[in-house]
Length: 100
Image (tube, rainbow, N blue to C red; front, side):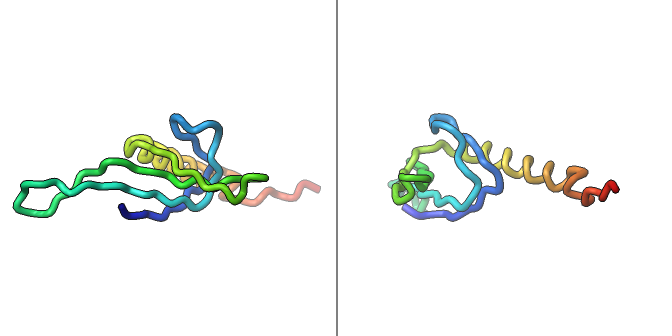
């Protein structure tokens, strides 16, 4: 099992997870198994887990949520698209003029 750290810039949703998950830093745990009988080392992913830290009165709680690689890629794609849209909006490009 190995871990991957990553940042998400915008709140996001994942199938099977209730409600929105906040923007922030997340850790992925990837579980793999060694494929036997090959002349070289090869691994197959058996599970991917997203660590979700609790909020409010559950701040010390950490959950591992099973996610699919497809759902993870889609969430990251949506985050990148939302960030690009926000960075290119008119409000982001020019400050609001003072109307006096």
